[in-house]
Picture 1 (tube, rainbow, N blue to C red):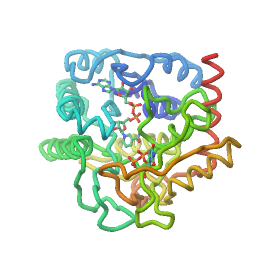
Picture 2: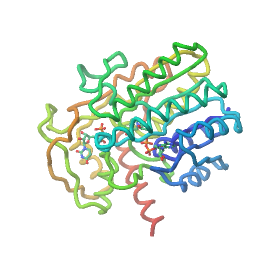
Picture 3: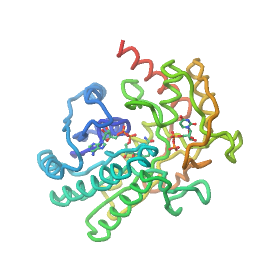
Length: 336
Ligand code: NAD
Ligand code: UDP
C-alpha cells in the first residue's frame, strides 16, 4: 500500500515513516520543511534500508497534493503537517488557522478529488482543555485555551462532518499525549528549530550544556510536588500506534477519536531526576511562573486504543530518557 505522510520529515512523521515502512508499505513524505530538515529523508532510508520519495510541498497547495496522490497511487494519508507552538499561536492566530485548518481543508479537497478516503490525523490531548476528570477518556468534553488547540478541535469537527456527509470515508483522529524519546538507532529524534517549546528536548539541551538551565513553569499546582503532571509516550510506541490505526482503517468506516498515551503521569521534577539518573549529566533548573494556559495534570485513559486498535504503549520512562540522551550525543557527533 502507498501511504502519504504530510509533515513526514517532522519529529513524529519521521518515526511513523520508519514504523510503517518496516511493515512493507511504500512511503511518500510531503513537507514544506518549515520546521524540519531534508536530511531526515536520508536517515529514514538508512534505517529502513531502501530509498523513499520526498516531495517538498505545502499542504495548502491542493494541486500539488492531487498530483502527488495520483502519481504515487496513494491509498491512505497520515496527516501530521501543522504548526504546533501554543505560545506562537496566541501571537499569530491567523497563521495557525491558515496553516492547520485551511491546510487540512486543502488536503481533504485533494483527497476527495482523487478518490482517497482514508486519513489518520494528528490530534492532541490539548483538545480536552482543563480536565474535568482524570484520566481523560475520549468522551471527555472538548475545549481549548489557545488558537493551536482550537485549530485541532476545528479540524476534528470538520473531519467528522465529512465522514457524516459521505460514509465511504474512514477517519482516525489520534489524540497524542506527550511524545518523547528517539528511534533506537539514535539517528532520529526531537531536534526542533530554535528554542524548544517542549520539556524533553529542553531538558536534553540543558544536559548537553547547550543551554544554561531549565525553567520549571510553576511549582504551585495541585500535584504531589507542585509541578505539572503529563503522560509521556515513547515516540516509537506512538509510531506503532499509527501502524495499528492504518490497519484499523482498512476494515472500518466513519470517524473515530482515539487517545495515544500510557496512562502513567510524571511530574516535571520526576522527569528531570530520571533524565539525570540515566544520563549522568546535571540538569540545572529554576522555578519560574506558570506558563499561561498550562493545566496541572493531563493523562490518558488508554483503554480505547487497546480495545479498538489492539495497541498499548510498551516502553518506559527510562527508555524515553535514554534514547533522548543517546540521540543528542549522536547529533553532537554529527555536527562536529
Ligand atoms: P514537527 O514540527 O516536527 O512536524 C510537523 C511538520 O509539518 C514539520 O516537518 C513542518 O515542516 C511540516 N509543516 C508544517 N506546516 C506545513 C505545511 N503547511 N505544509 C507542509 N508541511 C508543513 O511537529 P511534530 O511534533 O512532529 O508534530 C506533528 C503533528 O503532531 C502536528 O500536527 C502536531 O500538532 C501534532 N502533535 C504534536 C505533539 C507533540 O508534542 N510533538 C503533541 C500532540 C500533537
Ligand atoms: N515545562 C517546563 N519547562 C519548559 C517546558 C515545559 O516546566 O521549558 C513543563 C510544562 O509546564 C508542563 C510539562 O513541562 O507541565 C510538559 O510541557 P510540554 O510543553 O512539553 O507539553 P504540554 O504542556 O503541551 O503537555
